[in-house]
Amino acid sequence: MKSKILNLLIITVIYIKASSQFIGRADYILTIKNEYRTHKNFLELKQNYKLIPKYYYMIHGFMPVRCPTDMSRNTIKRLLESDYRISRVEPDYRIDAIGIPNDPFFKKQWSLYNSTNQDKDVNAVKAWGLHKGSNKIIIAIIDTGIDYLHPDLFSNMWRNPGEIPGNKRDDDRNGFVDDIYGWSFDEGNADPIDRHYHGTHVAGIVGAVGNNNIGITGIMNKVSLMAVKGLGDFGFGWASNLIAGIYYAVDNGAKVINASWGGTGKLEAMKDAILYAKSKDVIFVAACGNNNRDNDIWPFYPASYEVSNVVSVAATDKNDNLAWFSNWGKNSVDIAAPGVDILSTVLKDNYNTETGTSMAAPHVTGTLGLMISFIPYLTTKEYLKVLYSSVNPMPILKDKCTSGGRLDIYKCLYTMIPNVKKYQTALLYLLEQEERNKK
Image (cartoon, rainbow, N blue to C red; front, side, top):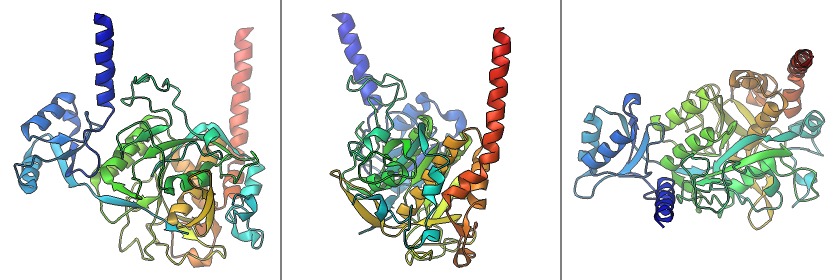
């Protein structure tokens, strides 16, 4: 009897740990100095200032909190800023999905195969002759969630191999109970289901199942799509949820993160999370915004963070023009990709066209996933060098992005072929050595 009670208590504690104390906006996002990132300091800060932390533990020094109601927020802010354990106190921003809301047949996916202007698509069909992807590659879609039951996505969803579904235990001890498909930081639970549409549309562009006689195909015919719900059911959310989502994606094996959202608010805490992704060789792809303005002058975050693993993506249309709504930046935007009238998956097993840099970014995300699957041992710097040097150069983009061109998937993979041969040669050598050792 005692053991049953103890087990129940353990399960309860684990479940509390993986849930949120509150959902929605935090008053402040605290960044704790490296040497003070302990649970003891977490509890002391909570108690000393009567704070309500969003999460029951500190995430890599990231601690979003709400203030006590009996003191002014400004007073609390000054007290927190003077605490020797805290390096930064920043506001939590509202962040919106980037998309202009607007078939299920491949011939309607003009960005992958433009039947009327074949030199104006991303050359996907030719690229698939070289490689179509792999379920071993995890791509994190940090967004409004994913409709993981959609018949064109279900087989390509990430499934946490360390979790046993429905047993209300944190089997893999990653701090999240029953996170089978991912996690909802918007709701503080293990169900990152999309009730909006945006995240599902983005996911389909990256990795709708290919050659299954259903609907459309993603840039990666095979992939593992991790659902990280940081935006809510109305298409917006709080920076604190998105920051937590970045840490979750990196810690659970994502190779590329797609961020089709943003705003003008700059947060060092979010930059820290992106730097953490960089330290783990995770690429962060971000939509550059739909405001028809120059990001060199008016930065748009997270696309404008000056971190080398960030890929900022502008949108083009069917005629290879920069989309009328798309932001640009000669020095701050990296590459362009199709983002107008893009057909993809939406809720209730359906498909629809959507427009925005939100749709351009996952074209690049899917391409990077293909590249990593094709040659899995290169560094972020090497993958991005290939990505930018393999664009289809366009005069109209010369002064609009650093690469001066639009995404070309085939060129990316073709450029990597010498690396494939080196990789194969190395593998053959290792296999030969293994056979000799056995003898």
